[in-house]
Length: 301
Image (cartoon, rainbow, N blue to C red):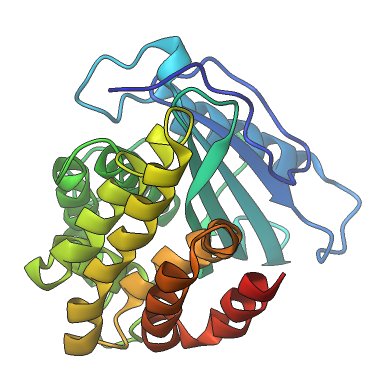
């Protein structure tokens, strides 16, 4: 993998716990302000267990060097706890990767998952076996997003680089089809884990994954050497989104892409020449209408 030394991911985290990492350097926070309890120990042990699980497990097929660890964060907000082992929570999952030759980390994933119900008993060992149908929901949630994080990172460095990890995430989806927990099934809604995995492996959306590669590897990564060419190629990569959007405009993958990238795109668009601004603005008005005012306002500054 073509990476420079990573800088710490800038994310708002509470009660952050560090551990020795293999592939991921994921900062985990369990936020429990909504829970009325005097005993906070279970939340602290939960945070430690999740941190050790996700950072201590080998996710990638390659030998990841210490300076290549993928920066990520998971913020779990507990909305309700029964005082024993039942948790009703949501999670914010973020990841980033360094831009070649700079100290800047660019966001790759920023997703809010509101269906994080799970059971956990204090000091319970977290284990995941990809060949077993008996994994806990918490272990499946973590394994799913760990593979999504790795896969999306690999996609920014090579075309289709993330496919093996998206296949592993799909395996988690398959394991969870008999689960009573929400977020795993196609019929629930079109913005859940099932559809994230489906979109990433669906050939209709291959241009979106290709766009991620050209955006990062052929765009951002050459900014330090040739900022004008990097900007042009980065913005032109967005044109790849037009056809799949026309075919499937409500697909979850577009929301995922632009939630991570809209602020960065708006900033980069400011410095583009007027011809390219007009071309990309016309595209963004179609494929990301919810953020269009941000893009348009940015070009006026």
